[in-house]
Amino acid sequence: MNGLGDFNLRGHASGALAKTKLEELLAMGTVVQLELDVENRDRYGRALAYVRHANVFVNREMARSGMAAVSIYPPNVKQVEVIRAAVDSARASRRNVSSSVRRLGNV
Image 1 (spheres, helix red, strand yellow):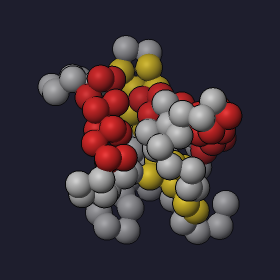
Image 2 (image 1 turned 180 degrees about the horizontal axis):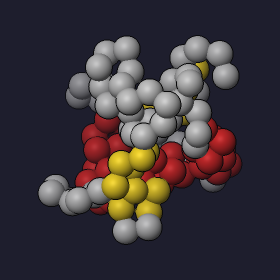
Image 3 (image 1 turned 90 degrees about the horizontal axis):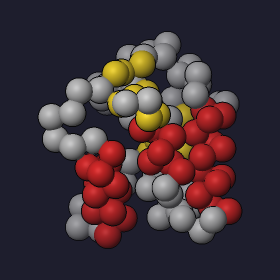
Image 4 (image 1 turned 90 degrees about the vertical axis):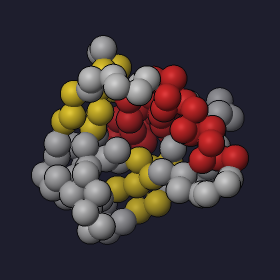
């Protein structure tokens, strides 16, 4: 998801928690709306999109629940401030699984 760093930690509890939260928000087979920014893919060929379902901004909810860190992929910065605010909220409420903020490029 655009704006979020995943917990790509095989066998690590953080990854399992994040996966469970995402499955709560989006059951398998759920139809979602994808909102693209300037670039559609990252340097590894992965799709970069903001995900919405039933009036829920999934990227923000994952950040607000503490299940993701901010990852910035310039020039894709349309929702960066919304996601940063959600991560800050998670930290303030001590909901964060990871306190890291990764920046890719200059933003």
